[in-house]
Length: 277
Length: 277
Image (tube, rainbow over all chains, first blue to last red; front, side, top):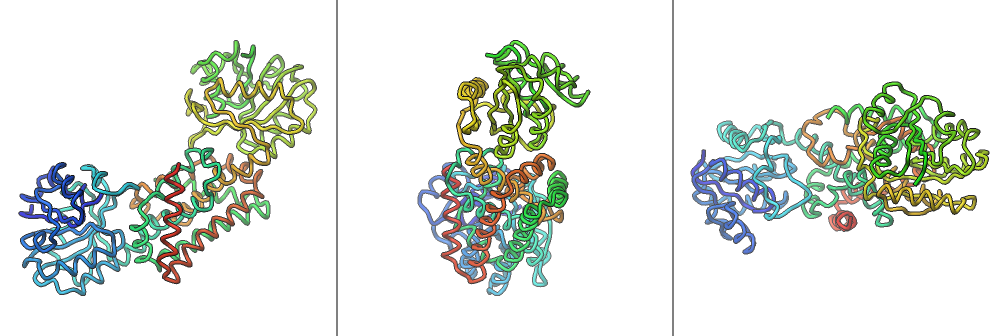
């Protein structure tokens, strides 16, 4: 599919992507770019990439397809640093969890004769780091690719074909629609899980059953990653946190006023929605 | 351990208990009491009980150990109906998820020469009904047994030995302490999960990743059961919902004021607590 693919950032996403590209033979050569010596050794041993370099320029200069898989804020600064070295016709994408901030900022850069469109493979876990890399991480999951009025359609289609070849179900949104949706189905659940853990605290946690464990698993996610995600989608998230507080207040007020039928309606509604998943 | 054990209510808990009692040979005879003909047939086929009756009086009159495993509010009314038929020296307990309401009300009843103490085996699932019965449901989990100034110590110890024999780790609390703790570690997570589902709604749920799925699994729980639990522990739950709303507001205000370090502290704190589980 490509001669050379470069993956910048070998964490859970970058590492898993390397494994999947190699397995599906989507490139003659996979180059990794990493900041850590220990990651380089591990990535080479595990066959995540054919070569790994600390040198961003060397990593991108002959590459046909470049994917930046670092945390959200870093994606933009790496794109800036890489821009002068991209070859003509190269395609650049990312794997960040928010899209407006990333796409707006990268579209403002001069990337010469290269093309960019944003991606968000909906895969991940509360684990992080290259040692959690999993060749099947993306299998069967959705990948959002973002289209704007600046998008080059040929490049956009190539990016879509890439994610499809990785095994994902590709879906196209504007960056704005993407961020609106993922504030609800991903960033709000994270905020909710974190708040629940902090409200419950440490005492008697050994008595918590599976319900608490499951509903707070994501609170173990990497704080640095989620800080970037929350801040680059803050307007949507503020709105959705408001909606969640309103729902909690509905339960509170049903309990205060001893309104059995109001509580029953709330519980029934949630069950109906959740069962449809 | 007992000659006759009676289980009143053959749902997930009652059914699983029957299977565990039979497997561990804790009684010569296990009698089930159920309201549904279809449950009776299923329970007999699966060896959940040696006999099952629709007749409460018949079910309890010669029994040494009676466990009521119905929803919380029903537990009290069944105890009331069964009271006149309990034999001298019989031990009565329950498996309800809140304890103050149940214990207060059953201790007010005249149960003749029988003894009562409350139990709460911390086991369950978002599934319900006898068809979900699982012989290993209780294995290794905690069971709270409640002690009050009215408790008969010999009977209390026998109840503790029973749950230990079932394979549970027994812990003793007052009903008040039980309800305080479980409002936090169980009822609040349920309220949170239900509120999250209702705030997110139906749109684009197919794009929700594992985080949303896990943190809302319990919202599929049986509304009738949770309605009773919420209302019989309403004072604690109202307080804890307030605490959760406050935690959500902290994230909201960090986002509004662009306070990166405040958000980082919140995320770090939650990760530290959750990782300790």
